[in-house]
Length: 241
Image (cartoon, rainbow, N blue to C red; front, side, top):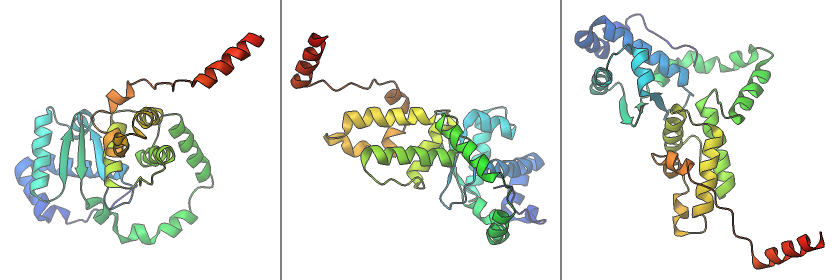
């Protein structure tokens, strides 16, 4: 999302009036800065969870201490602007305000934007896909799509990359800097361990990409033991040489 509507009388809204009363113009500015940060991550869906690295968000909003930032965010929660959760070293923000700010003009002009898009748009898209496959995605939504596609391929299931759980957990790990190849490794190692056992039901986004992700990443993929017949054939082959 490249832009959003900012009404000239937005400062008169109950929420922004309360923010100015509690935090002054600095708090008012931080509100719009937070919206800009979320707009950069906005994928156009109505159930998106915005995931930020706690330290980075604190620095971007100009807070010296995390507690000060949390107090400010808590004020936004009380004003029904948003909700948020702190998990490890990330903050997950849930709000529908970006859809409201997106406005009808953005939706109605979609066809015109496509027609006026630069001719090298497909070239840029291919470049982004290459970056994703190299483990350095430019866009979390595309990373999420790649991860879920691989998970479905390995499990034969039909998880959706647009589900709240996929957005929440893959987004959180992406914010921590994990790459596509690391996601794939965790899928491989836990699929090998759990598929065909009572734990197979846990081969799902919320388990694989939750707070045990780093532990799974450090597991070793166990090579399946060769059958007696395979061993005999290999011995016979070596004997011929």
